[in-house]
Image 1 (cartoon, rainbow, N blue to C red):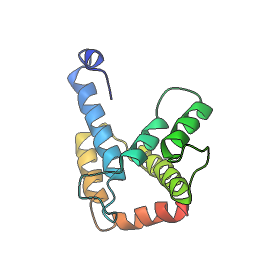
Image 2 (image 1 turned 180 degrees about the vertical axis):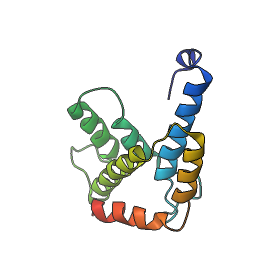
Image 3 (image 1 turned 60 degrees about the vertical axis):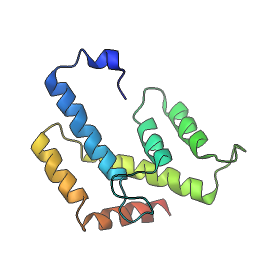
Length: 130
């Protein structure tokens, strides 16, 4: 995510903070009820989620995310594409709310996200996307 040249200027605390942020963010996209294996994510949904964190205005971010999910490149999203778009956006919002630079807090959040209670959170995201 960060160019190698730029990361050379990071101090150890910044590196740990980024590691904690991305660990929690990735974990949010690691749905255990999908057809993916543990520690795998849907790359398109992860990219759409990350696109909202990138620089640029709201319109360009929405357009970039939309283009990633427009499989036919006809300017329209399928029902599945729209679901993926909404699920990625809602998951990204949940992920941002859980960000912590503290390693112990990150570990606790990751354990909670991997617990059986996380299904309730993902069902809420899934139902919000429907």
